Structures are given as C-alpha cells and as structure tokens.
Amino acid sequence: MTTPEDRAAALGLVLPDYADPPYGGRYGTVKAFHRTGRLVQLSGITGEDREGRVLHQGALGAELDVEQGREAGRLAAANCLGMMRLAVGSLDNVAGICRVLGFVASTPEFTDHHEIGQAVSDVFLDVLGRDAGLAGRGFVGASSLSRRNCVELWVSFEARPTGLRRLWPIR
Amino acid sequence: MTTPEDRAAALGLVLPDYADPPYGGRYGTVKAFHRTGRLVQLSGITGEDREGRVLHQGALGAELDVEQGREAGRLAAANCLGMMRLAVGSLDNVAGICRVLGFVASTPEFTDHHEIGQAVSDVFLDVLGRDAGLAGRGFVGASSLSRRNCVELWVSFEARPTGLRRLWPIR
Amino acid sequence: MTTPEDRAAALGLVLPDYADPPYGGRYGTVKAFHRTGRLVQLSGITGEDREGRVLHQGALGAELDVEQGREAGRLAAANCLGMMRLAVGSLDNVAGICRVLGFVASTPEFTDHHEIGQAVSDVFLDVLGRDAGLAGRGFVGASSLSRRNCVELWVSFEARPTGLRRLWPIR
Image 1 (tube, rainbow over the protein chains, first blue to last red):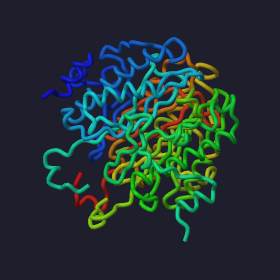
Image 2: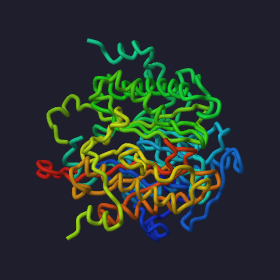
Image 3: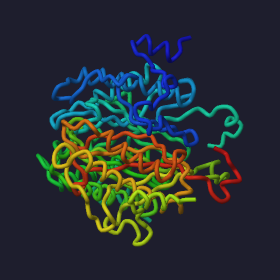
C-alpha cells in the first residue's frame, strides 16, 4: 500500500520537512499552524522552497501564463502537505481539508484563477485521496504577493482525533 | 409565519438548490462545505447561476458601478443561503453567520468596497433575521476574479446543534 | 507586573474601547466578532480610529512607502487587540492568535507585503507575549481597500476556557 509520501514522489513532488530545519527561520515571528480542537489553521504558504527560492515570479496575465501558475500552485500544495505533516505528525492524521483560499498575483484581465485552484486540488486529491483531500476552495486575484510569488494558499484542515481524544467522541 | 425562503422570494431572490443537480458538476474537485463540530466553512461563492451565467462581468471602478456590484453581491448572498441549506438541511439550522470575507474585483481607485458588503449583509439580515444573519465582514479589492465575476464571498457559519448533540450543550 | 494595556501604551499605541461607544455605529449591520467554542473570529479591521480617520490613504508602491504601511499595520493591530478585549473581556483571556490574513493595498510591483506582516506580528508579540501573541500569517496585495485604507486584517484567535468551562478540559 502506498503512503501519501509515496504518492507525492510519484507526482514528482517533494514534501518539505518543516521540522528540520525548524520552520520560521527566515521570519522568526510566524507560527506555522494553530490547532483549536480538531481544526488546524495554517499560515500563508507559497511555492518557495526551504531556501526561499521562488520558481515563477510575477503575475498571471503579465510575465506568467496559466501553466506556470499551475506549477507554482502544485509546489505550494506540496508545501502545505509538508506543513500538515508537521502539525499532526503524519498525513494519515489529516481527516479532511476544510478549504483553501488561494491568492493569485494577476492582472485585471486575467480570468482563469480557477485553473490554479484545480491544480492545487489535484495535488491534494492525488496525495490524500478523495475522503481527506477534497476541499472547498476559492481562488482570487491579488494585485501582488510577497517576494513576487504568484500563488499563496490559506488553508484550514481537520485533524483526526488521536490518543486519548478517541475516548470522548463528543463532536 | 414566513420562512427564510418566503422572505428571499419577497426580495426577488431565488435560493438555488445545490442538491439537484448536485453541486460541483462544473468543477468536480470542489467540496461545497466542510463541517467541524458546529463550524461550517463554505467554498468561494459568486453570483453565478447554476448554469454558470455571470450577471455583471468586470471590475468596480472600470466597467461596473457600485449598484451593479451590489446586485452581484445580493446574488452571491442568495447562493450562500442555498449552500447553507445544503449543508445543514434547512436555514432554520443556521445559528449564526460567523463572518463574510468579500472579494470585489476593483480598480486601484475604487473606495466603496463596504457598499457591496452592506448589500450582502442586508440579504442575510432580511432572510435570516438579526440573530442568525448578523455577520462579521471585510470586503477587499481583488485585481480580478475567476470568469470575470465582480464579487466572490468566503463565508463561515455556526450550525445549531441537532439531534443527540442537544443533550450535551458543552460549548 | 505589566498588563497588555501597559505594554501597548509603552509602544505608543492606544487600544480602543469598542464597548463605549458600541462598535458598529457607522455600519450598523456588522458584527464585531463571532465565538464558536473557543474559536473567535473577528471582522475585517483597519487602522481607522473610532472617528473613522484614516492615517495613511492609498497604496503601497504608489502614494505610500513601506514605513507608512508598517505604521498603518501597527494601528490595525492595536484595533484588533481592542476588539479581542471586547470579545473576551480581557486580553488575559486570549489563549493564542490563530492567524492573521492581511490585505495590503499595493501596486503590481510591490514585493514587501511581509514587512507589514512583521510590523503587525511585532505588536501582537510585544503586547500579548510569545505564547499568546505568536500567530500564523499571510499578507497579500489588494487592488484597493475601503475608504482608501492601506491595510486591513482578518484575524481569528482562541479564547481561554473560562468559568464553568474550566471543569471540562475536553479539547
């Protein structure tokens, strides 16, 4: 049986290890995630690698085309999966992605934000399966993003109850 | 006594039935909502009708004026109400809208985003009443939106506890 | 021992009292916050003072520079703290800020959105301390904001369980 990591690798994606080095080195004042009960909320996540390299810089409809936006979205989705693993120990503990709000740096004329959303959803579905990976989403145009990223994701997910929590299945 | 559907009809609004045909036909990879405990989070919702028709296309401050934006906001709000009904069976089960983040396709010069928010709030208040319909909100400018929509809403609401949950009013 | 209010004053910030006059006077249809269990979601909050005065109007990269954006972000953060106090009675009842989504009115060329986020985080950390003040964040470019504000924040936080809730430390 394949694991989520196996499936990500088969897609050519690397799920970063945000535990080593610890997340937040570049911005020491950002929390990776917050968990309230089963609800976990992640920080804004781009497609930057751990060294801060940005693959496609600029705006959709200007310097970048839809395929480049989709590629940046796939990288950002892989980073989200790495962050989920950091938050709940294993992707097997992700009960379901609540929803994904996506910001796409784009011109006033751009109309295909949903194509980037589709690319992000495909990664989540391929790696987590339909039960856990199907997510609500909205992808909207940003005038610009930090460090010329073209995609930034704002994700919340539900963790599986684990350990003692299983004894009180209250909600 | 009037129902929320009665009140929506009196406002000239139709609450779409997202159960029939099932939501997600056009984008098979989008979840309509996610429920964690009493918290329900909806996907991004525009004013498009079930056939994908967009009433006012473009940006506020450019092709569109505030009144057109308000009209698109009212349609999007009606669609949200349809989605709430899908999520919890009846609008009577909506305990309260948590908050509404609204994206308004708009030019750099546009300053009346709150007017669109007001139109959205009015629909929620008129249909759900003050207890359930009063919502937090923020309306911000997007550089552009999918398929040239001018308004997209990002909504969370609290469901009433139902069935067995009523026995343990824990939180 | 200093209080959060003491620490805010030492930073030259005033935490507004949203109880007097009551919040929502200007927009009678906006809820200040929504609490579901321990999760509290705030409305969109700018740096406007209680009279609606906006310190820096315009967009980063156009009329405004990064330092002006940071100043607006600090005012908005102080307003958020005032709203948290309204929501849970005292800043001592804030268990932790979940995350902050920040909208920065900015040109397509602007790349330093994270600098505004840093300024906001610094206020939360300085006033609430690291345990409660460290927050997830994402700061993105808006094409424009209501009433020519340059920063608007979208915040959720976790409240400490209080009163009877302390007897059932369930989640």
